[in-house]
Amino acid sequence: MHLLKRTPLYDLYAQFGAKTIDFGGWEMPVQFRGILAEHEAVRTKVGLFDVSHMGEFEVSGPHAYHFLQNIVTNDVGRLEISQALYSPMCYEDGGTVDDVLIYRLEEEKYLVVVNAGNIEKDEAWFLSHDHGAVIVNRSQETAQLALQGPNSVSVLQKLTDQPVADIPYYHSRQNVDVAGIPCLVSRTGYTGEDGFELYLDAGAAPKLFLALMAAGEQEGILACGLGARDTLRLEARLPLYGHELSPEISPLEAGLGTFVKLQKAEFYGREALLQQKEQGVTRKLVGFELKDRGIARASHEVLAAGKKVGMVTSGTMSPTLHKSIGLALVEKEYGELGSDLFIDIRGKLSEAKVVKTPFYKRAK
Image (spheres, rainbow, N blue to C red):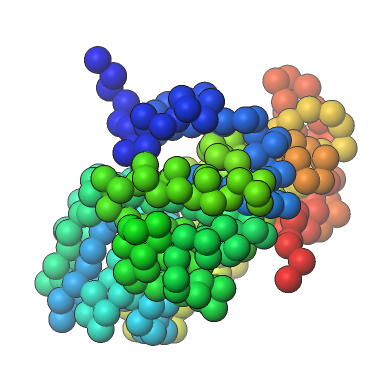
């Protein structure tokens, strides 16, 4: 008897050579062909990810806007119909509940996409602060596929009559027929590349996955796992909940101030974040490169001037830059660009330097 949750695509994994791991209670593919090959496919061609473990909530009714505006730090009032918005969601003390993507589907209907490990926690948080909004958890019945990379437009276009190249970044289109399957097609992603995230009925996910893999054959498509998803998002300096954001780390400390709209009248965590902004944060998230060999990993200690000044939140060997990179939350005075740090990697102090992020930016 397996205790791990599985996505609707689980039965296809073996066909593509998946190696699975326990990811937050889900049995997910960490890789198919190999992390390096998959990473490179997304940077140079196209890759397809199963991200059906993510959670989806439908929020509707006359109170939907008020509820969302209160529960997230970004300004939902800026959303046109079909537009998407990224936002942290905070506790009263400024710590982070989750970071979410919000789609405005209709005048009074939104889709909120949450992290897989936070579905139950977020649902409880939503329902206890609902302000009269109608909140329905659609996670079980919804699958999500991410088609990412420079060739993603041409692959997707083969399977639909609707022009997808003209969907603007952070916008979506509903009821797009892709390989005979109605999808919400969104020009978003978590890789630093151009691409799409497709939301569809869970039962149709295997059919769509196979259709996309077949359509992308000439473009060099690879099925991709969570390993490449992590190296890609880290190069692009995109936060991972539980690492760069957590109940102990505020969006301001994580360098996400641009998604915190303190001019909004009220929202959960506003007072605490306002205070942090006025007084200045004491810790900040910085990017670093290791000068020595080795890889810094989450929770490794960061030292400077002979004392502990922070900890690594994420680290990897960058497949694109061929350098050991990472993000660390450090005391503010040790986070200036060019600062020298030391990272305790299994008892050995490795030299590191604070560098500019994102580590990688695609040429537009």
